[in-house]
Image (cartoon, rainbow, N blue to C red):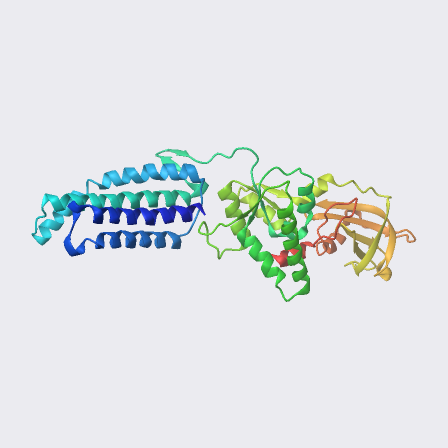
Amino acid sequence: MVLHIVRALFVLLMAAVGWSYIKDPNTQLGPYTWMTMAVAVALAVLFVCIDILAPRKKLAVFAGTFFGLVVGISIAYALSFVTPLLIDQYEFMTDTPLAPKVREPIEYYINLLIGVTTCYLSISFILQTKDDFRFIIPYVEFSKQTKGARPIVLDTSVLIDGRISDVAKTGIIESQLIVPRFVIQELQSIADSADKLKRNRGRRGLDTLAELKANERIELIDYDPTGRHDSSMPVDEQLLFVAKDLNARVLTNDLNLNKVARLRGVDVINLNDLANALKPVVLPGERMTVRLVKPGEEPGQGVGYLDDGTMVVVEQARHRLNEEVEFTVTNTRQTSAGKMIFGRLNDGQAVAPAGGATTATAGQSGPRGAAAGQPRRPRTSPESQSQAR
């Protein structure tokens, strides 16, 4: 909105320059006097169109406007020494010397046009360069310093997962939550998928985003990184570029993105690690209930999921598929991808393999564990999230 006002004022000022030239009786050019205003307005429209078509960025308005005026006036003052040289060159090429009465108004008119134009271009450029503007001196670089809590960039998998909405409701998040525009577009494409499972995940991600926007305890920013990097890159690559550009942290539960981000030097918050740190410990010998939904990879295994998405592998329970069974915990395995629980039927004698070496393979195809303890909502699986990406 502010940038539109600046553009409108620029056009009006250029028109005023032309009008002042027409009204001055000492600056009349006969039948061509009216062209001064037409040329001024045409130049204003031309520069505004060029500015609109250029990649847009943003910056703090007041500091940018002030600094832009200083730079624009400085450039205009420097160019004012060039104007007489151009007029002298014109006189030399046309062999028609201009009378001082005509030369001075023309020089004044050109300097006014240059002054208004340079001020506008300087303000517009600074308003669109935001925080990536840097003042560089040889061997010394003064760059942006982050004050307060660093912002957090949300990944698609976190929005699909949905737990971030519950975390935000607690009021523990004080940082800005940034959702890049390409993440929203990816959610929309997933929600429009022909695959029913993908479509449901996309819609859940959009619902999570709507809940975050309605939460008054957090500051959610819809960030448009247009022009800062190649938009044809994969979403994960764009996410890392945005995080580096904003000196932000990435919130994700995608294990692969987590590893790549650490290799790139980008700070990452893994939502599964956070959930694992907060969940109560499930001890061997505890009794739990789960609904078995599919067979495991080892003979006799049945696989089910708790309401929070934690995967459960029960030995000698394949014959109880699609039933609620009570089992005794024999072992647990906790990783950044989630948590798996191994157990045996209470009426059986089999025990789970130590460490879950073979059953861990089956666990890689199940949902990412969120948190044991109080169930809240079903979560997505690692392969589901990778397909969604």
